[in-house]
Amino acid sequence: MNKDLNSANQYWTVTAEPGKQVHLYLLGSFSSSYQVNIFIVDGSDVNGKVITQITQLSYTYGPRNAISSSGGSLTVLIQGGLSYFSSNINFLFTQLENDPTQCGTSNLAYLTSDSSPAVTVQISGQSGGTASCQVVLIPSASYATNLGMKMSVNTLQGGMVLYGGIDSRPTSNTEIISFSSMNDVISPMTVAGNIFLVQLKPGTTISLNFETSTYSSCSFVTGGSGAKGLMMSTNFPYPNTKEIDYSCSFSGDGINYYEYSINVMQYDLGTGSLIIKSTVLDSDFSKTLTGTGSNTAVTFCTNTFEVDYKSNGIGQKGFVLRYDVGKTCSNGLSTAWIWIIVFIAVIAITAVAVLIGFLLRRRLLQSQRNNTPYTAQPVYFVPPQPNEVNAPPSYMVIQNQGAPTTSFHNQVEMKTS
Image (cartoon, rainbow, N blue to C red; front, side):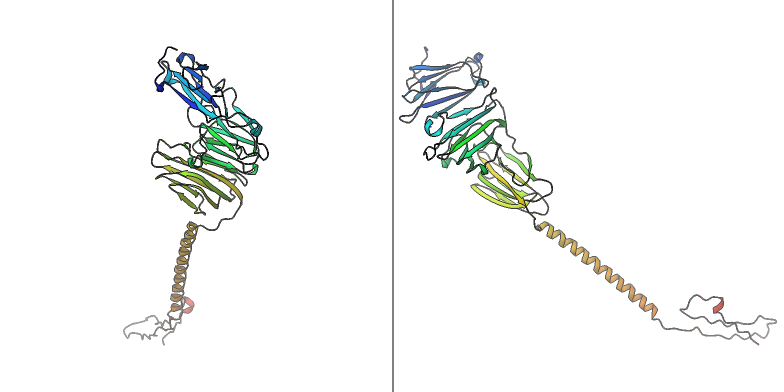
């Protein structure tokens, strides 16, 4: 190629373990106008045989791939043109380990494309076999943001684990979710990320399909008894690059209360927090998680619940949790309702006491008026004056104090002689 290839930064070589081969999947998008050339050389000698040359790549036609010979190595060279930094190139190197007689397939990776949105994967583990079959699932990266995968498991006999990324070591803490039987499966299920690894227990048989999907950070979900699902941070299991603050919520059907079982399978929160809480007034359940942990389970009775996720720093993986909706239930009085009832009771007792006091005072005053002793007005006799001629007769008027208003019939006239 008349190029100086003595500098190692011009290429890289990938070598498998002894006796195994390297399988390269190349996916992305760039046109020939980008002037990008990718050369795949069989073996570790950069001047060896070129088995694949790629000048353009498209999601429409799916990935390109190359397999090393018995030497077990592949060398990749990239010649970048003027628009190299505008291209989208992804390399996936895998090591051929699957024995077709034990796993039913020699494919280690499956990729979606614009022309094939849904991809079917079938693995038939040999009964009693010892192979732990693995397969990599890669949704098309044509979605610029919020890339995710929608996976549906049609049949499962045995057990499987879904990892974010391709590192399945226990210390990596990249496990998203595991299923031990078909009854345990969440299907369909949407997860965030752009590459996933499915690892099966020995002897497991599975049929699934997956497709590219967008993953919303969190949305409002509803369901009744038997509903189940998954919530996760969009960056899991990769460290986040910005502060995050959002909420996810779930509501049961109608006004019924349900037994919710939530398992936070992985969380890496740093100085942030993950709060799981009921959002109805008569349930004060709340659980706050901080730091790092796994498999933290909570159970409570409510109609709706909310998951609040906040990352104060940079570098946290976030969380992934599973929820299962059980049977309907009846929730006891919460602390908030107890205080409300106590407050209302105090007001009612105070009002009754005031009313009783008012009535007693009124009755006492009325009793005092009714028991006032009878007092007759004095009777006066007015004699006629000597100098009065033809004076009218005098009158003596008797009026009872406290008696009804004096009328004509209550007056007694006494005529003087």
